[in-house]
Each structure stands twice: as structure tokens, then as C-alpha cells.
Image 1 (cartoon, helix red, strand yellow):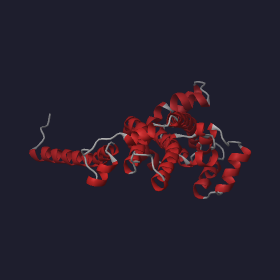
Image 2: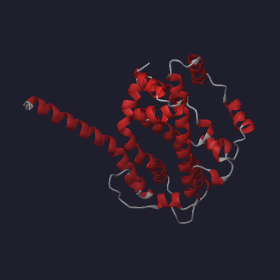
Image 3: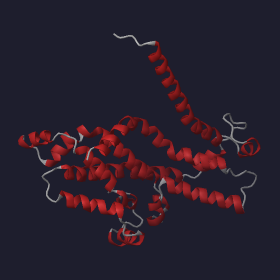
Image 4: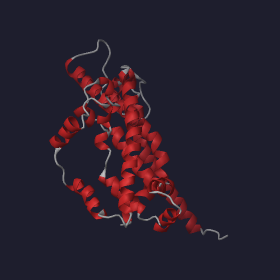
Length: 290
């Protein structure tokens, strides 16, 4: 076994040191923001942002979780994210796989059909009328799912990855009597873990962070997702700070905003490490192969 020279060990140690410093620099804003969220508003006014809170306070989180509807918002967001991600992944994956098959007739025409909406849009008003008048999505949980089901970008990303899979595997499965669905779910999908994990993260983030669909289509409070619920709470808090008061309680401003940030991104922070190791590989292969 070859022993590393002193220069190699020095270079490796220096690289590890630089990466550690970079990781600390990336982690520091999150730690500082969390410490701000558990600080009192008055201490921020007097002393500014501190890594160690001068005066500990959970008032901001109490304001967020005081309304029981926040839990309903969590349930709606989790349902929409899980169901929407699964359905969108299946639709985009099957469309991308179909276009990756060379013998598919008119596959270039189909690809152009998906490509045109990436460049040109019909406008917000026609899209809104289709969703409300034709699809009848107003005040329905599906209004938070259906409009985002199909993404041309994700379809092309998955198509490019599927084209890297050896076509001889598919031909062998067809000779053994497998139909298209069995080939896709039992052969193609297990070989496409990196791109599936990458696209899953894209779709889940889009569903979890979206609040505009609720703004346009939802009037029932019981169907408000978490993001829109927090947007409404923030609007009410701004109104109270400007035009009213809450007795002797000091209404949090900066601490409340940062607390809502952590309430919102918490599940995503927990999910991302599991998909992170597939992320770069999925993006690179899907982008380079044509």
C-alpha cells in the first residue's frame, strides 16, 4: 500500500480544514436565526442579534402555535405534498420514459408539446378559468394538487436520464413477456434512483412552499395549507403592530418572522439529507446526456 507523501497529507488536511470552515459558515446563519427566534423582542432592540440570547423568550412560537388551525394547516400541507409528489412523479416519469423510447411514433411532436409551455404561457386568466370553470377545483383539496401535477422541466430531466439506460434490458424484458408498465416499474424505476430522488425533492419543495394556489382557489379555512396560514397570521400581526395592541404583551416582530421560518422549513430540513446524496448525480446525468 502506497504511503502518502507529506505534501499529499498537508494538501488533504488543508482541504478538509477549508471544507469544515465552509460548512461552519453555512451553518452559522441557521444557528443565529434560531437563537433570534427564541430571544425576546426587547433584547433584539437593545442588543441586536446575538448568538447567545440575552433574554430567552418563546413568545414568538407561542404566537405561531396558539391558533389550533395551524395544525390543520400542517395536515393539509403534508397531505398535499405527499399525494402531489407521488402523482406528479408517476406522471412525469411515465411521460419521460415514453419519450425516451426510440421507436415511439411522433415522440418529437410529443416532446414539442411539452416544450412549448416552458417558453410560452397562455396567461393567468385562461389558466384560472380552466381550473375553476372546467376542472371545478374551487374550494377543493385538489386545487392545491392538480395545477402543479405536470412539469415540463421534470419530464425532460427524467427523459434524459432514462435514455442512458441500456435499451437491451428493455428488449430482453419484452422478449420475456413483460408489458410496458411492468418494465417501467420493475426495471426502469429501480435503475433510476438518483433522478427520481432529485425530481422528488424538486416536486416536494414546490408543493410544500406554495401558497398562491390557496390564495386563488381556496376560501375555506379548513383547507388552508401551512404556508398560506402563516402568511395570513403574518398579515394579522403586521396589522396589530401598526394599528392596535395586545394589552401588556409586546407583539413580536422580527422574532415572529424567524419563528415562522423555522416552523415552515423544519420538515424540509429533515427530508433533504436523505435525498442529498442522489442530488448531484441525478442533475449531472440528466443534464449532460442528450
